[in-house]
Image (cartoon, rainbow, N blue to C red; front, top):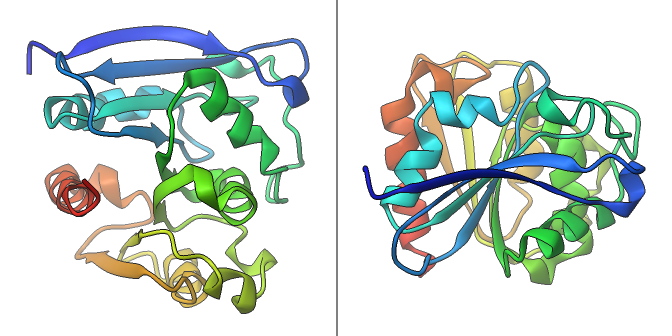
Length: 212
């Protein structure tokens, strides 16, 4: 994996005030197959995806991995959040992020807290989402089943079988998405990617291979 190119930077989003958002990037030496945007939960930041090896794993497999610090977290602490925690943010937020990072149609990995950002983006700017990988995201109950059913984006629903609250709620709501698969990680909790990184990486790489 030594050929993976790592860098850091910032991206400006109009609706977050004057403070730019921090991101990390891991890129393969050859042209990337796809861009994968990694969001994070309330106890984490983009550093989480470095620590788990997810960024390096994705880049080594030929993908451009981008990990964002959401407003108020990590090195984006000064950025103004476009919505209160646990309320859906404007879909325009991630649209501007992806435009600034020149992702093209993007794969969005969205655990926990980040559902407040990823779900409006998925539902309002569907054409800009290549695929969606939700990991027990919040806010799934904020949208009607009919709205989910209209979305054709390939989706991999991932959750740990020990996450008996949010995991099961999100599965019930997100199962209304018309083009989805489900991975239940045995013995894993809410942050299932931390409990079993090997299974996590295997599952997302297998899914990504079906997109190209």
